[in-house]
Length: 259
Image (cartoon, rainbow, N blue to C red; front, side, top):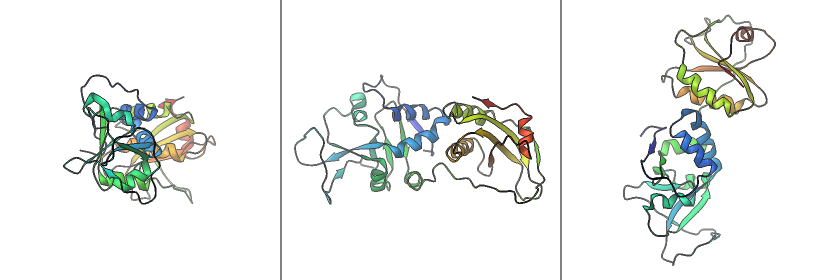
């Protein structure tokens, strides 16, 4: 399965109400605009695994002592079922008896089992396969990609205009993202080329944004990348009201998004 392949099952409605994170995961299964949020929320939440042991089942919470060995249930092919909450274990009544489970901080659990393929919520209406390479990128923080800040140290000639091929999918996905990000006041798009560089012409997005821009920039780049060819890339800039340089161009255009 691909990096962003969520799987769905046509089954009766779930009996357990969705947690806020599960609501995001459900949206991400069909909407690119929520997939960056899915990864961020995944690492910030707790995850649950089924455990094995010989002692009788006892309900309640336990504190594991240091060096305690816990058996984590896996399928015959080595894949490990992981759940976003204990209630998801019983979805669809596939598991008919109560089982032992362990709930852990996602970061700690993924470090333990990240070498295996993970099936997230395998019995639910929606789920996701997490491959080892994907888990590694979640843990090292590179899953959303990275962007570098470019500083023009001298006057630089640019060619800028509206793109001949308008990226409707990217723009629509970004509009849905920005509706969830109140710091974004407006967003603009253009097609830019730096003749003095070796870079090909490409899309550039200018955001009228307040506060810290790094998180929204990462999400913007991640979402745009889902619709681009592997060799394509984008620039993202914070719009200034100075009216200088390319800011003047964007301020003369209609934004594709306005809050």
